[in-house]
Length: 483
Image 1 (cartoon, helix red, strand yellow):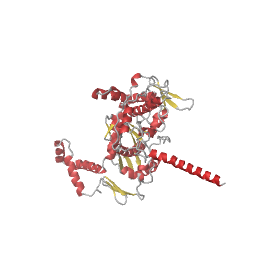
Image 2: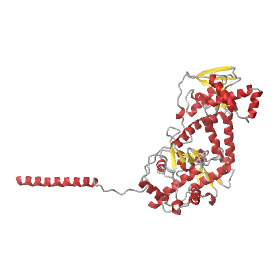
Image 3: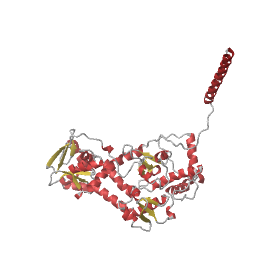
């Protein structure tokens, strides 16, 4: 028995030493200074870097969306005007609480005008002349570019695998592609040689289908950019043939291996977005890489077809199955932050807007069109200071009350209001802002509006002013869970 115990103890000691040696070997291997090989592929999980130029653009766009909702509401009313009490009630469908609608329209006096009804003696709201002029300019620009909109719709249908898209998905994104509200009749049914409208038997949904594939429409916008850059700058053909314009946001860290990965990706060939890929074998690793780059080219072409070179990520997701786009679109686009930018401003991060970076410079479109300029006119009216309204009103009264000397000075100056403006500014500096034609809000929240100097109506708002930035966007945009 004693011999057996001695032998077992020796065996245990030998095993413990072997275990110690086994645990010691990996620690030495991990602490070795030998460098491992680095990967030269673009990382899939990229952190989004903010670009304040695009975010500031979306902050203005957030205000424009709310203003446009009130504009559409006023245009549907008789004589395009509505009582403030009724407006406050109807604005709740937009997410506004009680008394918030009246406070909101007072922030934009260049767009909305509050006046007293001459008969009913209650406050009414209507659109200003500048706002009505902007709406008319946008309508004229929309009709003028209707042939280009037809071409954009044809190219959009050619981007899909089957040459057809759901009518509902196109209707949701109609303003992005410059299509009128009644495009089903004014565009689709008006041009039967280009489009065909039919009902699907399986789902009973309406679809738009392109009648004929025109090879002249299968040229991507990025190909024209490559050709122009190659003729102007020159360079190696292999470096330009499959490349994209890359402009990383400020603060984006670019390492050595990331540069190599981008250089390899730029030279990688791919199938064009308008090319039929039904006959290719897509199971290989090389084919998957080409399909990923083809998805980038498809989204690039989709953004190039829009009027403002931007579209919400939720609307792109509507075309995901028809255009063979990946499921997690947001993560996919974050891999290519030098080509696209995703802004979460505008609706508390619930809405994602995708910009084409090469089309913008300092928050403005490089090649603006007439429809874009007409829409930006509304942004100018929103951003104008309310004090300029007071100056303009005083200028009108100054012109009415002025004598022959003022008229002569005006004619001699070639219609220049600068002298009159200086006089009005001096008068405004000496007088109180609570004059005859001014609209002022005091610290207690009382809004006094005087028209023609005859009457004064004080409407007291007892509720605290709430922030209207939480108003949800268009109900047409549905949140996609896999984005």
